[in-house]
Image (cartoon, rainbow, N blue to C red; front, side, top):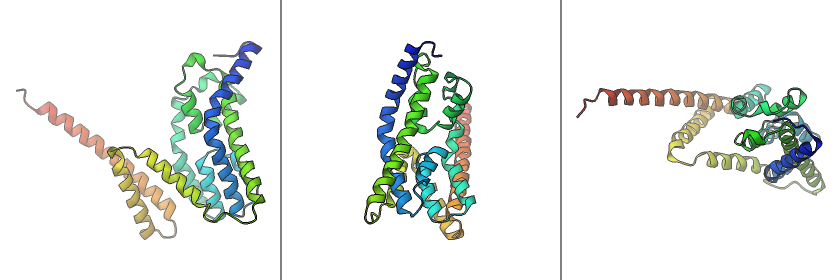
Length: 245
């Protein structure tokens, strides 16, 4: 689990680079989009690397740019980020953080535990994991994101005029993510609940639509979970009560 020799450390660095390559192909263009959005929103260029280094949360950063540009209330921003990143609370339960040496390296690994890093290392055999490999992979994943943002800032700054409609890229991203999550009929009720939550929020809370929709949707998902569990429990009881033929 621990790197012992310079040779094994060099191998771990190389493997970490390989681990990050496939992720980087997807992360870099999103970083470019972040840089474009920052410039097109009229925000200072340094906001792109600041978000990428200080937050490093992928799609949340894209959303934050729009919310900052629109002067969204801080409470709404905090609630939105909490709802979108709540899944990260459960990542440490299965992420092989024990493979990373305690100290600054482990603290960084926890901070850089994005979806892509989790998917890369959670299924990897433990004997293949080393502290150097994981930290190299995660550092390079963030480097792709920060680098993409800087490239996007530079390119957008050189354009004579803003690209009309480019801000819709954020909407498109979340639509694609939603469609990717809904792959079967089992998730159709969640889509319906999301639509109802947004509709209710727009009608009943016109001044705080986003935070209201998130709250309503969260409560409806919790209610659905308990209803399904109760229905399954009732079904098992009915099966046990049936007389043997």
